[in-house]
Length: 246
Image (cartoon, rainbow, N blue to C red; front, top):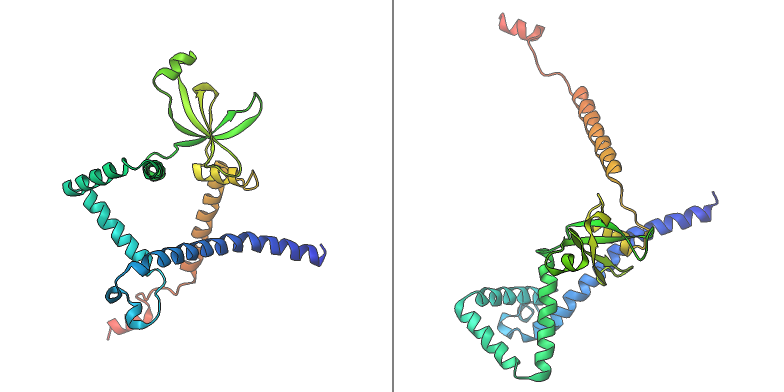
């Protein structure tokens, strides 16, 4: 294989490893800097560490925001906090433009935060957009209510069909249970497959089991080799017998 081909392959492999790390660090630092720029100017001077050490502390604004948000969440659970929130929302509802923006943002935040409590159960395959063409989808829940009866089906499953490469958008489909093929891969692996447009294929269940068995055998071999290389523990040898007969 020519040198430049090997160099190109090594570069692409390194890029796959380095790029996610660099992007993650950049976005994290950009987020911390944005929060600091918004929050730190609001902190009173006596409580700002930069007043005493004459340098800004990265992440200080993020810590202040976390503490403030936690206190607000704690207060919102109390009776006085609930009354205060209702009073504030009542004032916002009287402002036409502000009411629209506030209600939209509240709904988005509640939807995003509720994903941890109502995440997708499993990845699956469905025939879409026609027979013999398969697409990855995520099982949401069993379809109940009027829909199965109107569709003339005994059992239906609500699935979310994501789009590539942005899996946050897609279609809600109600599919007969017999037409849904459940997959062994996790929801995270299926999402990676969708985002990468099929370039990142997760290992199968059999491959994972084989890897686990191979790792177990390696550990056992290393443990056996380590135990074989240890010196024997002191026993009742000649020196011991001689000492005992003294």
